[in-house]
Amino acid sequence: MGKWIKPDLNTKFHIDFDWWEKEGRNLRVFLHSQLCSDCQAMYASHKGTEFIDWVDPDTAEVQQVDGLWHALRTHCSLLPTYIDEHTPLTTAIFRVFLANGNKPLSANELAAIIGKSRPETILRTIAGRRVYKGIKPVE
Image (tube, rainbow, N blue to C red; front, top):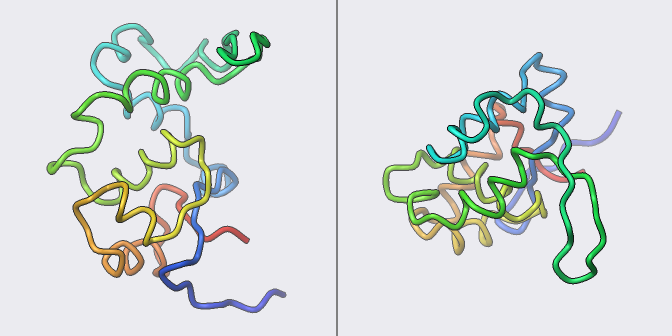
């Protein structure tokens, strides 16, 4: 059994996809709910979008990627309403991880990106006993 270490402002966090499965929650349904209205209209459901072909603009390599995540990263996250003053903190944090490809970030880094909350507030929110949207420390 591992030793639990209390996260600090520099501890890296990410979306733990295993958490979604363990909790019996459907990540793809939640991803669909995070799409902008245009993308929600284009993707009427979370089904049938699991894999789409995407051409890497730098290498021209064709890769299969998740259609919903791709829409979030390449379209929705670029809109000014993706994260604004009305976005709840846990949703804003989750959306940052979606937009950056789930690259681990610390509370300090998240605060700089979100720009509306102090790092201490972010840390208290995501480092507690309750797990929000699968956001957990990187092990």
